[in-house]
Image 1 (cartoon, rainbow, N blue to C red):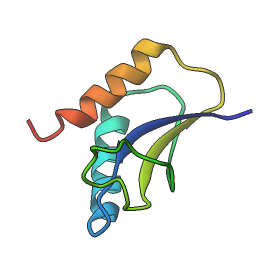
Image 2: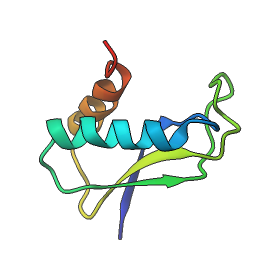
Image 3: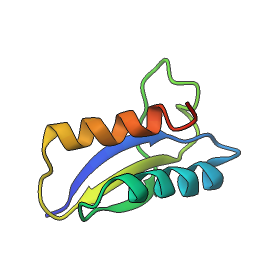
Image 4: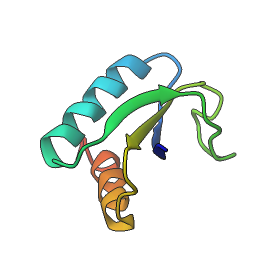
Length: 81
């Protein structure tokens, strides 16, 4: 059974660059075993990219800790800072 966690809603026009950049950030910082995929998941109603059809998700074989998922999301949130 796979454990899928939404990391970031990607833009419709620039999603490939965002996917590659976010993947580099996550692989540089985290050593846990996960696979990044782009799937069409729903986004929040206030997300500017909610209709893009591109959501970056992390897929784990085993359930990760909540702290790990939160750290991964935070590292993507501040990746340009």
